[in-house]
Image (cartoon, rainbow, N blue to C red; front, top):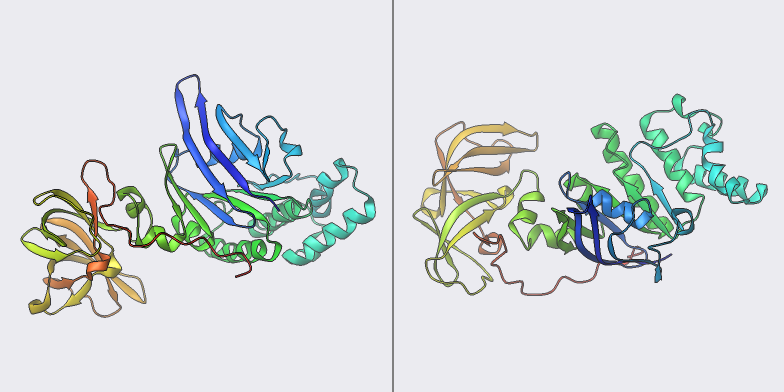
Length: 368
């Protein structure tokens, strides 16, 4: 096992295009770290620099404390699982899994033992004699993971490995990857653009934007205490509502002509314009006399166990999540929100104005 340490990593193309802009990150030994962000944010480029498939323009990459900037990919003691599986179509599953070990001169008996054990772990023992073209997408992804496991690497790297699978199979493979990483205890860095995938898989979540890290921490911490408007809007489905507001005084903000209480608010000036962030599930339907806000209903989206009520609050689009059967067909509804669930963001910088009352604890160990 090994930690992964990135210090002020930069990647510049054609002399001026910055894909990665000064990223520093510590991934402790045995953790499952997920890099998430929109297309073009630099997450895959960063992963490829860890793997040695891209050169580092500036900064230092360490694996297990060893600087690997100039070390060939094959000598970094890592294994990578790709989006397109990268299997040899003319080889059997067994030969695909054994290929890297044979190139290293591993004894035949050890190759046999490692391949059989990996196949057992991944439940692909009955596929060992088949060719990749005879397998489903999920089976091929298991083979790709098996090829990585047999190498017994110190670090696993995953580059959007589930993006070619259908929605149901992605959920199944997420569970399998998480279970596999925990049982093996291997440090893993995983890239995805899917924020649900990122939230469910990671011990350590890294949200990237425009080549930089926006926030690092536990998934639940980033969801409930986002440091920036970008993180708040990127994590969550449906996404957070953003409404223009104005600070009225300590712990109070106006949205339209309605006042909301805000907990743990950083010191701000009276009359300061802000963006108020409210998650759809944090808005509660209440009687008119208890309402802090009012939603004018446009339409209702059915999701089975829940309903999404779309409309406007103070003239701005908003969405409220309610249990099935509670959404009105039209008209308006009164809403209330806990002061702890109200987020404020600086209009100019996007930074959160909520004061964090306690630092995020370290992620739990894989065995926890």
